[in-house]
Length: 569
Image (cartoon, rainbow, N blue to C red; front, top):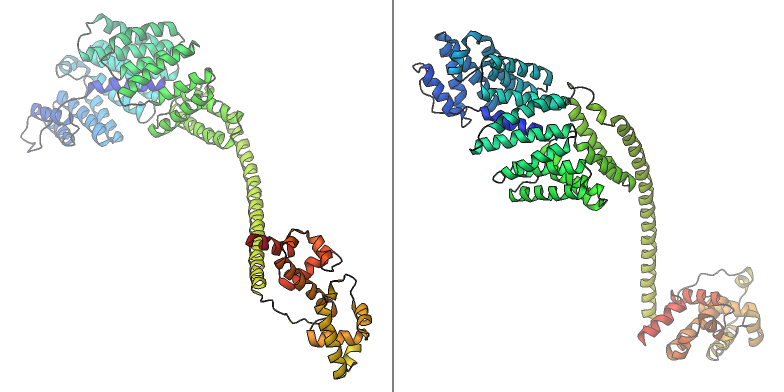
């Protein structure tokens, strides 16, 4: 609501703008009246040349010792510098100079020149209020201006001064004083014939002031009565009409008539859209209404939208606290701590701005904020988020470790599969390499010297042994072979070591694996056997022994070999 007050105050203060302009030529030969006309012509279009004309007026008025024009010259200089260059400190110095040269005895003459001391007080007070945030000093100036107007009547200046005083009383929370002024102003304009567009707009703005004053003292039904009158007269005004609907919506909201409040805000929304404007106030009110109607999704969406517009426009007001409290409650309830912290910081920033703005006002405004609790809650939130962040880091480290492990396993598996595939292709092409076996001879075999006849005899017997596939017997060992060959086990071991380049165990296992490969390739029925059954079939005492021997011989396991054979089939 204070946003409306500020906006209305600024709108009304612009009604005192001067009009004018022409190019600067030689100013020394110009009369005071000519310089005044040139100033008016340029100031109307905010032309910076207007400042030069105003300064020339000061110089000329001093030379001619003319206090009437000197007052106007100082005032015009202050106004042009304020509006064009925004050098407010310099503008204030010129206003002070204007006040100093003013002679109260010249009231009648000043009125003829369309100037008065109230304008100077109003100009300085407006700057102190809106630029330097000094409301108490501004109020004193406005009251001085009001006092002057009792001696020298000027209805335009009177309205400006009264509007400014009402605005400050509203900001200070002295609503009854503001209401008294707004009621007087409204009934005065109501007596007049409201015919021109200017008169109608002034009527609506004054009505809005009075509506806000009634709302500030919780007189919502009186406010609604005025709003309905205003809506009827506002059909041709695209700014005032939606604003009236907004005020109507807030009245119904405060009266807890939420459906009617929603209907009014929808009307305001329609007019803002048609005028290509989207005020944060509509989103804010929308969010509050939907919150009361328990439509959380729409409420949060609207309040988030309002927040973005508030910061985009940098337009902060006390009423925005309600929306932020809804947001914070929602995110706290849903445990969305990141969002809760984000909007807490936004809320506290707004509070810091408002704290600076209202530091000169009474403390009752500050009491509306639960800032100490909010700051404490923010610290708790930060701790929670830090803990969550730490847990998240551990989680990420765990995922990275797990990912690395999975990647390593995957790479290992890929390399193994690649190795198995290569080994399978070798087997299928019949290129099984005989790998040299490292073995250690015993002291007995080292010292053992065999005759050529013994070596040839045992070699022939080994050849028969292989042809007859006697190695498939699971009971075959070195002692049994020695009995079979009617020879010495040491002799047999020596011959196998020398001729086959393997020890006895490897020699037997390789014969069995070679036979299993051949059978599996030629007889597809064996491909349906279990590894355990195949181990028994080819003379191994256990599945593990068979798989181990198969891998040692082929660099792949029997299960993989069988799977690939089936694929080829």
